[in-house]
Length: 383
Image (cartoon, rainbow, N blue to C red; front, top):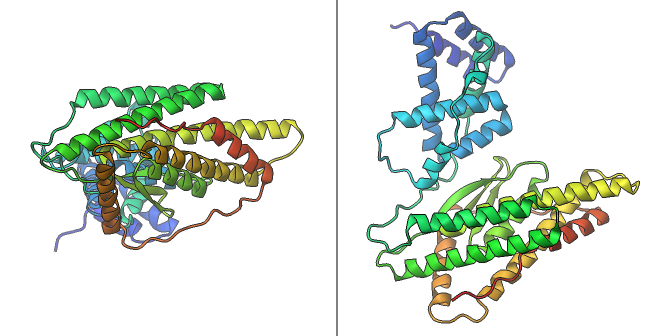
């Protein structure tokens, strides 16, 4: 019988128990053995845990997000290094889509500032990370459909230029201190999103090989995550997508066609930044007037903001196809059916949730006003 290695004994001690004592035992074993062989085996064990997360439906951005939520930046650096190392071991051309590769590109290799101070602290952090990775539950795999051969589509550079313009407009809307300017910039960005989406839909409808809806996950972080999930749902619905919120794991899965998913990510992020900034200004004004505001003010503000944004986005979406001509309406209807079918396959059972803790009248009024100032104008019906 072979003797268990230091890594095997440390992992057995630390990962299958919840106590701090078990964690300390495992870290002590690793700290006492500083051989290169042990370090290499420990790193390989981490890469295996990362690969196990992929098999359970997770993607790089999901893992980094949950590590940041549950642990701290030290662990984020550790898991980023593991993800990149695991990716380098995979054969080139592996069946992973562009979204996966983009998530890898956003990870940073740990620099000199990430150097460990002492071996025991480093071993403790590694085992804390491994314990989290080992216990990640299975989630719905996104399984993005590959681009069919022969599909007619615009050049990648044309799509990239369009998305660059949209990002620039939303960045200006977030940065400006003038509500009217933010409104105009956001409206223009939404118009470009509509043009991008409809162009892609009509082009795909004419192609011999039909496109299929995909999915992505977008983080919905505390505090006030229910209101944020409602806002994301409103943005998704307006852009012909569907969103399902996973509250325990802190994300929503958005189902839709690729151009629309891109629009949802961009617009939700921008509106959330604008809403959070407006909330901070409103709360500061309330305090200047001598009225103390608390969590209920912020919760009510964001709830009203999400509700009002949803109304305005729905109105914009309705007006866009109010008087359709040509092939547009059948194409959009077919895509709606495809999205609904994909959602049903991924989530055969869902439940609705309610906003709670919304009882501050001033917060509600301020949030609704902020949504009006961040409004997205009804988009012109595009040919």
